[in-house]
Amino acid sequence: MASFEKEKGRVEMLMQRLGMAPDEYRDPKASTGDETGADVVAVFGNQRIGIQVTDLDTGEAPGVARREESGRSCDASARGSTYGIWAQNAPGKIMDSIVRSLTRKARMSFAGFDEFWLLMCAGVSKWGANGATWVMTPWLTTDALDAATLPSLAASKYSRAFIHMVFGVEEKALYQWDRGASWSKSTIELSPAERAPDFWDYKNDRDLLSDPEGWRDREIKRVLAELRRASEGNQ
Image (cartoon, rainbow, N blue to C red):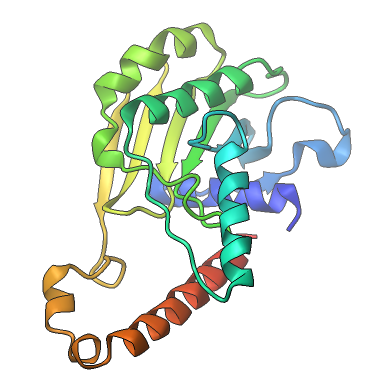
């Protein structure tokens, strides 16, 4: 999928969460090819909002976590197996990835827009690297975000900034900053269909108790098929 279509999809999910409906989305590079800093332009009547879009990478350096996870995925696939990874729950690493994204993006030009927004996406599904952007948002507080980012945001030209948990582990969280204000957080509780089974679900699973190896193999195939479909839908 082209970069603009992927980034536009991220913006569309944000707008849906905000209850906003732009008249259209434009590719800022399609007409002039100029580097404005925007990845997507949302048009509301005569107002043009330039939006920078980036996926949070929770590794020690940009691209490392996703690259390492892709390697584990390929190795597991070659062995006919699967691999495991945890969502990032270390507050320091989460904050480092946010500050890194903010610092890198804020350097760009913001010419020609009525407003300029920053959208940082977490929990982004990508085949072979689903865990690299996952964040345990219950650990990410607005106070910590304020302490780490408010000086940089105040000095930037952004009018709004967002951290959007596209697919959540425990909740679908949206963090929002508006110029002159602090960070706020809103959540959507995961539906029963989206929640992972708990201990009692497994304890009462007759298939698991009677045939644990067969149950394991079926679950691996089911999860891999779901991840493929989710990844294909976001490409």
